[in-house]
Image (cartoon, rainbow, N blue to C red; front, top):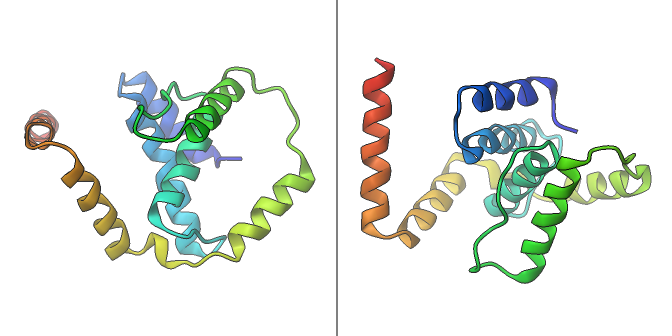
Length: 148
């Protein structure tokens, strides 16, 4: 279950009209904080991000499933998470919850280090084209101009 602060920050982003990925970023940040605090671990930064996105979908963030580059299994899981977000009435299985927590506790903590997150960000950015990177930089510059 996400923390109240995280849910509030995500709702604030939604009220401000920010994109679903920005809203989901709050959940990813929370997950990385949990790893850094030692609540649990993750195998790699991708796993930490995936857990955060899953929590976001289950919390009702309208985040679409990943594009066709990912496996059918991942797309199906994302669709299930989104469905849970639309209809959050079911009680969580205590046994499964404990099992997931125990499994994550056995994972390493280095997935949330600054260097591994930076490496992940760089490798993801390289996969995008030059035009997409340029567009992102221009948008960031516009955002900075608007905030100052």
